[in-house]
Amino acid sequence: MLKNIPPILSPELLKVLAEMGHGDRICIGDGNFPGKSMAEAGGAVLVRADGHGVPELLDAIMQVIPLDAYVETPAMTMEPMACDKDLDIPIIKEYKDIVARYDDRGETAFGTYERFEFYDHAKQCYCILQSGETAIYANIILQKGVIK
Image 1 (cartoon, one colour):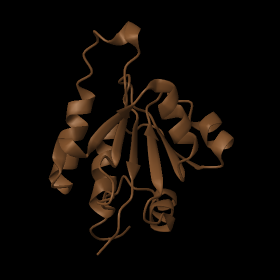
Image 2: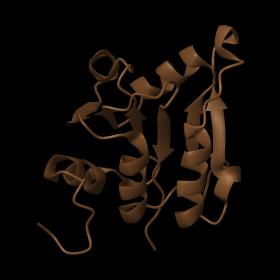
Image 3: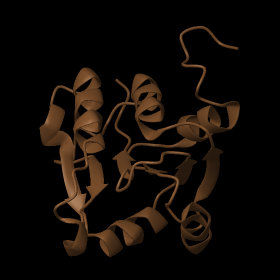
Image 4: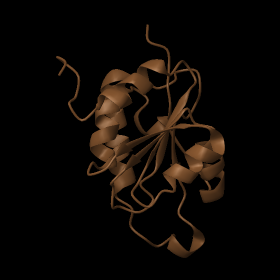
């Protein structure tokens, strides 16, 4: 164990976060996200976090890495498909609240990708973190910034 490191961050995940450089991205996928196939398609590191939800993983990750200050939207979520536009997806608001605790831009740090565009970007991430999150559309891509 380490002091001041959230215990939800496994040694494997800490190693990956430390390896990531400025501009590298991590995709945190929900339990329905095709993490293994996305990682294999793009050559990303796949890390499993079964039993953990995205909000607690996001909060822990935000404690140890900054978001990229050199891009407008370093936090990207997946837009619901047209057939799901009427669904209430409260987890995105939760993500925005978490990010606002660590990044002064708050909600303005967020953007969205259409579903298949999100998949294309996930394949380009350094790491795909597969969670056990049960909420739908609970996927997020974070772009790491510079530690000053």
